[in-house]
Length: 611
Image (tube, rainbow, N blue to C red; front, top):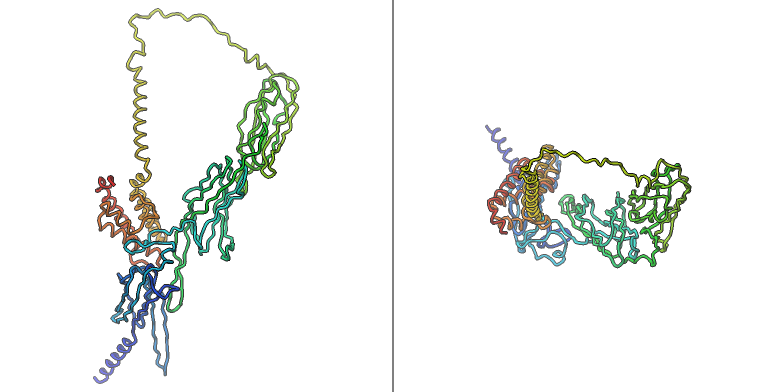
């Protein structure tokens, strides 16, 4: 009995010693490089849980801030031996990531983990500084909540990423080939996507797009800062008129990885990549275009560049009244598509009748010009037999490099034409004989005969097509009226467009592809809202989506479910920890939310049309 009491006492002492060594400690870390927390800053509350098997739960709300992420960020284990007694202790670090939203002084804690209470911490959130308010990025809404759903817009660029447009010559001649390039400068770690929302605006230019762009990054130092650079667009442009012509740069969407830094109690300063979408526009340009020198030669071909013309006779024997051919080939660089040859009927002897040819252009758009060849295949017919001279053909063009008009000449030929079977004149004057006998008259005619044109069946062949034409015009005009508003068309078809994206998400679900699954879910949800509410994706945020949906009469339960689902998808996409909700449940919730919103829009169709 005494021995049993000693065992119970030892067990109680052991439990007491373990309980005595367990602890939970809270601490707050200000943003990197700052001593104080300001509105809009990201700051962290660290849980240090020692000698406990339990884990803290994610808080649903924190005063003055929005909960962004909560996850375990580190752990440590130590073993000590004193006089043969081995003692083991463990510590786990949990980091709560917050975004400051409201000014004031606040407290957090104590929290309970496995029955052990923590300390209480205090923190103060100050007013946002002027520099922070001017920084590009998601802006706070009227309620103080950051617009995390809206991509950053940085206009023509900032110090970390920008585009620079350049043209090979700022002063040029009409029709001279110029090279327009768009070059990307960036200091971000990774570029995932570059896409143009539209083409640049070239006023009074003919444009040829070149595929000669950068396949890899190079490095360049600008104002003491090193950038990774790449040519992302190149065009060969030909000015069509004299004067100062303008080139307006287009907007590009660039997806990059931005480094977000946080402090780890064990490993110090650490960072994680954060996807970031930027809309960037290159600078506009002006080109001074000079007219071609006067006087222009009478036989000017319209070519501006450097060209050469050659000729060839595919056949060697010629007969009168039989067609033959001669080929002229223009090769070189410049506005090859606009080169014309002189009128050969004025150059060739009258005994040779020449027929016009359609040029076949084989041009290649390079990095600095358009080069290739243009083939003119002329057919001609000797009208008489004898010996005739095919004259040389001269191509007159303007060379912008030398600034003068230059000529290139194709060789002429001497041909011998044999006698054919007939002459052109005899063929032209030939007449066919005909029989002038009258056909016999049918005597079975009756005075009561009614012509077919007076019957209803005859006119029905005209009435039916006219009626069908009128109906087609009415239907087509109604179709144009219904589809003239692209935003309205997309709004009507928002549900079907979203279901296509959901089918892609379901395919990812079947493959257990979590990364692409949440991308497709976010695309379906944000795309549905953009089309249905007739708002660009860049203007969508949780706050204005909520207000607009309420104006359209959507149920509050559907709106809350939508916002919650967006948060869940973004958290699962950007968080390294596994989500507490399965992908199947997320997919089913997405389908239900879109169906509920579609039902709300249909129920309030009359009200929405008034808006």
